[in-house]
Length: 117
Image (cartoon, rainbow, N blue to C red; front, side, top):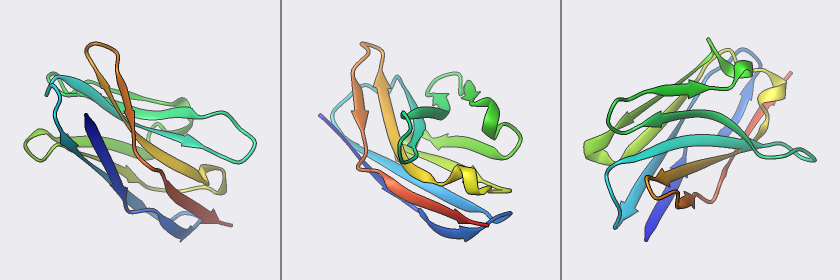
């Protein structure tokens, strides 16, 4: 079983920055993909960014390319999301996700990010 604990959400003005962190603990393979999803009120959950554990390949939603950067520290089992130039439309609950090579998915509890205009 894998547990994910997120931190770093909050309220920020448009144009500001926030960094989210997600620490994974528990049993599980070190070969995985970790990522961030978000869900705004009335909308479906969407992928924001993801990063693999071995090659460190990254994938971003078009809406955040050039503004957000995902990274991970494998020894700490932690993934980060650096969010710059935040916009009001980035307001959502952000969820950390860990996907194993056997396609099992684990989710964090979510952290609120609110960007005021």
